[in-house]
Image (cartoon, rainbow, N blue to C red; front, side, top):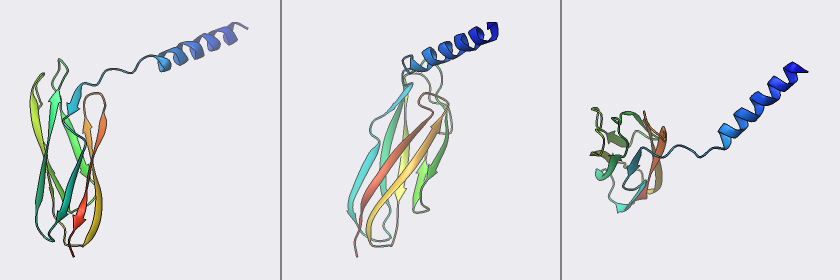
Length: 125
């Protein structure tokens, strides 16, 4: 019976912590998507996203994974200091005509740990 009471107490503690408010976001992006519109084949198009550190500790972008080799991304390798802003530069270049939808998964040391940038547009025929 004692074991049951301990187990029940543990379950209730775990459940209450899971229902607590999520931690506040420690950074923000000026936007999470970009529409390139209609672009010419084999022409590099660039979009710049600004990331702002809203915490009191340095923000580190650990990784930026792209969904396609047609997308290149450059992000700050140095920590973004509290209150400061840095650029994430995205370049899209493809020769295949038609609509495209691509993603970039950003991983940080902050909350949220992962966020996604979405790209879309159409390559002319």
